[in-house]
Structures are given as C-alpha cells and as structure tokens.
Image 1 (cartoon, rainbow, N blue to C red):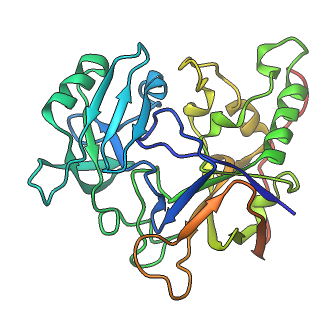
Image 2 (image 1 turned 60 degrees about the vertical axis):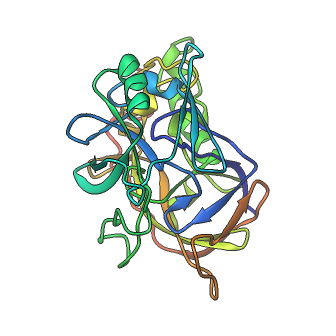
Length: 303
C-alpha cells in the first residue's frame, strides 16, 4: 500500500520549504502554501527561475497570518498580513500570464526585499476563494488555486525519483557529477508518496490520501528550477532536465510529478476540507491509460 511520507509547503512562492508532519487542506491547496509571492514592477512573479537565491529565504508563518522572513545572511523582517478589506494597496499579480488581484505588503517590507533582490514587491493573495481560477481545461467552474504555478497541489513519488536517478547513473560515466542522485527537494512537491511502482502516478486519475480525495488532473512539466540545489541556491545543471528530455518527454513537456485538485467531502462546508498526515495510506480510486513518453534515440546510453 502506498503511503504519504512527506508533506511540504512554501509560504512565499519559490522560498525554502516547510516540512510539517501534517497539513490542513483547503480547496486551493495546503493551508498557507504559496499565498505570497515576489513580483516585478508589472506584477509578474519573480521566482527561482529568475533568481535562484530566493530559495534560500526562510519563512515562518504565524497564526495571525503574518510572516517572519529571514534572508540567507540571517537578517529578518516581520511581515504583517495585508488585506484589501483593510485598505492596503491593491496590485495585479501575474503567474504565467494569468492575472488576478492581490495586495501589497507594507512599505518597509518592500524596501527590505528591494535592498536584497532589486525591483521587486511582496504580494499577498488574501482571497484565494475567488481570485485565481484554475485553467478550465483541467479545473471545474469555481475551482481556484493559490500563487502556485497552476494547481493546488503537486504530488511526487519516491519510486519515480529512484527510477530517474537510475537514468542519471546510466546516462553518464561513473564519477561524472551529472550521474549523482538527486534529492526530492529539487522538485518542490507538496505530497511525497512511497510504496508505489515507478511512474505509477502517470495512470492515476483519482486518489484518496487518508480521508481526503483528490483528482489527478495534469502531469507537471519541469523547468530550470529542478537544476537548482535547494540547500545552497546554486544552479547545478543540466540535470535532471537532460534525463527528463531523454526518458520523460511528453509533447513539449519534461514531466515529473502530478498536479492535484482536492475534492470537497460530502457535508463539509467552509475552507477546511480536512488534514493530510505523514503515514496516511494512499489509495488509487480511478486509473486511466498512461501517456507514452517520446524517448529520444540513444536514451540510456552513457554520454
């Protein structure tokens, strides 16, 4: 039986992870996950794609919605939670061309980030229930997400990571740094599942984790962030993108992990749908045919 063996959330998009043993689940994702993001002057998200050192900023959320953010040198700033209802400055946020309303953090917070990362602003999504609709090709009417790339949660499998690391070892000579196994942290999932077969998640369409159910709606296409060491903030490329291109290319996407949308349990109202916990059983409720990767000629040969 597959089990949930990891839970991760990222209070500010692209910053360092938190790894609790449990997390509440809301319709738009794990509670507190990516409700904040850094943005440039136009409102476009600024992430590790643009500046890998963002991953070295540590964030501690507080019960009142505020944050403590600590930079890589150990300096901290307190960030009160702004809201449109309180009259805080409104902003238009942009994640991959999807525009939605957000609220700016306090001026002193913007100065603190600007001194470290240049012309950026910290934005807060204070109304995830109505602000950002999921792509209608995959979401249902009224379903929303946070400031994540596109979907409420991302699931990854330890068996699939082991298989990918096997490709790295096979694709490169012994002693080549590119052959070194990668940690799961490179892929920044919310839920980590162990005990399944490699790539089994490709065929999952609906799963239960503990008492909650999720639709498995779309494979996750990967980008340059996977080449960034999450412990140091350094680019370590070109892997795993080369291996994903050889062995896990579907159309234009290099795939690792699956995007999830939580389902509302019968009789449950409000934002809290339930809780996922490390150790929860993961049950596959519905399956479909997995896609066939476009394996490049010569995949698997040492290079």
